[in-house]
Length: 392
Image (cartoon, rainbow, N blue to C red; front, side):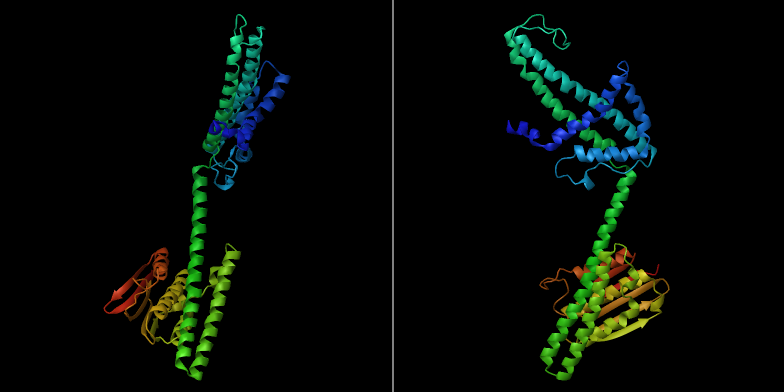
């Protein structure tokens, strides 16, 4: 019983029925003007439905009066934008006609069903009404009182059923068109890509800086050499400043959804990465060939981050003073980047490393987004990361 009566505790149960009564206000006014043509307002609805702004107004009403408590208007499946195509206009016309028909039904049941209950009670007391077409009763009888609750139960069912029906039809007729769904999906995809890119930026820049700082601090503590300690502190300071600059770039993207990408570091600044890694104890044999300044901006920026992640992984997982071979080549159609170091017992992202491989996964994702490819893994006794990016 409590479950059957639960709709009475919801605010939307009443606002939905009120939504059905709104068209009846116009019809009621027209009946006073011309009682012989109560259907006349329905003739104007097709013209109203062709007006683009009407769809927005109907959508706003439907979201406010038909949606359940707590529903997010952004995902309520009811559009609140003007009609953009003839299909949207025709759907709006059909919605207005449907709303009018259901409004008349709601008005009829809300007026006649309570009157039937009243007349049933009157019949049970000995009075037979002659103005109720739904009760052709020839004579009075007390048993009609037992039937009095039935119209009220039917009214309750109509109250809930018509409200649910108008909500379902609103989702169908006022819902977003195919073009609007595609636009919303594209916007959502852009947001997810932007969040993913920001996560990569933070992982690469801040992760690299922290790794270098930890390695430098540990090496300085173990060396016991004041001169080496001074160099390590200077390297930590330079790395920290660079990390702060990267952090400011990322925060700029968060503050401005369309922040410029040109402020991000490119492969032209690769020497800074290499010197930072050398200062952390890595023995780097670097070979940069080709005109790095001619590499397209997106490719150069992603190439910089890939190289940064590779060096971070070397410093984090390899042994001290590990030899690293770095090859960056700008060819006719591709940018080739390779980082190799001797394979140690601990493989980045491998079992027992305590690493989930997010850096390697980020390298593959960066390469894939640019239409390139990345190979990572053991190769002839070395750990190798080989990336090829198209120069497009």
